[in-house]
Length: 112
Image 1 (cartoon, rainbow, N blue to C red):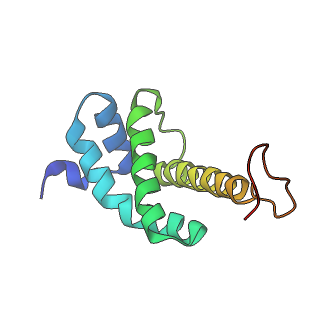
Image 2 (cartoon, rainbow, N blue to C red; image 1 turned 135 degrees about the vertical axis):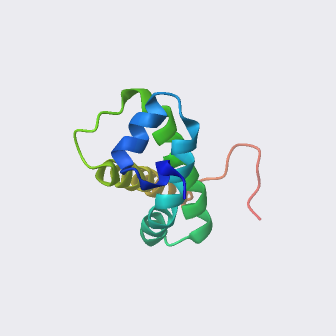
């Protein structure tokens, strides 16, 4: 076991903030299953959950310089996952409601 693996999440984030990329790998391994499970429950789609979880961890990595250990790391992480899932759900709602059976065909197109 590496010494880093025994560190708390906030300590790993501070280590990542200071340039230790190995800390991110530990955080990713430690929290990916729970993040995927949260997103999967919200989206009801395992493939989407995998994809969105990668975006969540990318956002964590990109925010490393701004990270402040004022709140629990998991609270911060799950908030990112929750918000990303909500955004995905909203985008799905808009794209599904764009078709209308009552819409007139565009000029030059004949109905089937």
